[in-house]
Each structure stands twice: as structure tokens, then as C-alpha cells.
Length: 177
Image 1 (cartoon, rainbow, N blue to C red):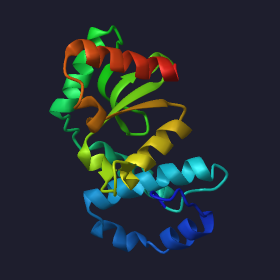
Image 2 (tube, rainbow, N blue to C red; image 1 turned 30 degrees about the vertical axis):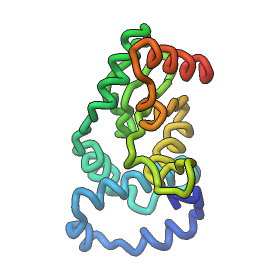
Image 3 (cartoon, rainbow, N blue to C red; image 1 turned 180 degrees about the vertical axis):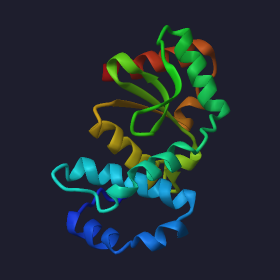
């Protein structure tokens, strides 16, 4: 469902209602973290329904938030450039829902996401296609009211100096704001 933006409440209810309390101890932290993402999706798509694993919400959120962010060199470089152009932001901001945003301006709910090679599927030709995780996170953030600006590694990598990088970021920010 993450890759194709497909959703059906009956599917989630049938699938997740079959999880008995006795089996919950078998879930790894990664499993619980993934179920938190499913719960976010469910709550945003079907606000009038109760998530089948609602009794586990606190545990799911704890597992999701326990994952330490690992900012890349590229992320740090973009953050430095954003500071240089006067775009004040929080670095590795964690939303109330537990989503980690690379750089965030809280007052206007704008997120800058730096997308390295692992954010894309391999494709034929020069067209990059976001992978399911990246697409899903962007969709959730937008549903929560965030404006999301992407900085793809392949665009950033061809910018040779600070002035060009600064101009690139200014143009990206102006377009969405």
C-alpha cells in the first residue's frame, strides 16, 4: 500500500484484527515501528474508524521513536547551506507522530528532505522514481499539513560551489512558499 497509495479499511481491519495479544511479544522493535506507520496511515485515511491495534499505540510509537536518526554528510551540507541563506530550521526534527524530518521550519510547517540514492528505485533512463518509503513518508507529512521540499542527491551533486547551492535552495524554497 505504501508504494501505490492503495488503501482499504476492511483489508487492514481483517489483517490486523487477527493479531492476538499472545503473539504481540513476538514482534521485533522493527515490526512495531512498521506497525506504527500503518497506524498513522490508517488514522489519516479512516479517521472515523478505530485502528485494530489501538491498544498497542503507545508501544508502537515508542518503537518508532527509538530509531536513532543517522544524518548523512549530504544532509549536513544542505543544512549548512540553508543556514547560510538565512532559512532558520530545526535539524532532525521529530514530529509529534514520531516522523523524523531532515530540516524543519516549525512556524510554517515546511520540511526539507534530503534524498540520497537509497530514496530512489533504479530506473531506466535518467528518470528517478521515489521508493515506497520515501513516497509514503512524503504523503503522510503532507496529510499532516507539512509542505515538503525534496533535495535529490543527483541535483545537489552537480552544484559546484556555495553560491550555486545557495541559489538552488532559494529557488526551491520560493517555489513552494
